[in-house]
Length: 125
Image (cartoon, rainbow, N blue to C red):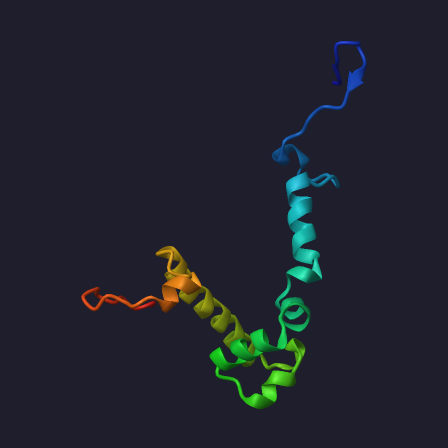
């Protein structure tokens, strides 16, 4: 049964996500998620090969405990173990950044100031 608008024109019924199951029409939210997942720009390979500069890749490789010979490799040339090492390095660097940022200690001025000796130091872990 079609609903009528204020001009007595037939309107398409509005379906919920549950109503759409089994049809070929996909909800907008799912289409957006699918587009993000299918977009190569949201993949580690694209970021490593095309977004990061040489210095950033070197920092990642060093943090992942990879050798100098690995610096010139593309992401696909790494083994699965090396790729996971890079992933762990990204997470570790993020954790370190968050530790500094959480206490607003990320500005260059604060790095140049003298630290207080009586302040207890907590680890990043």
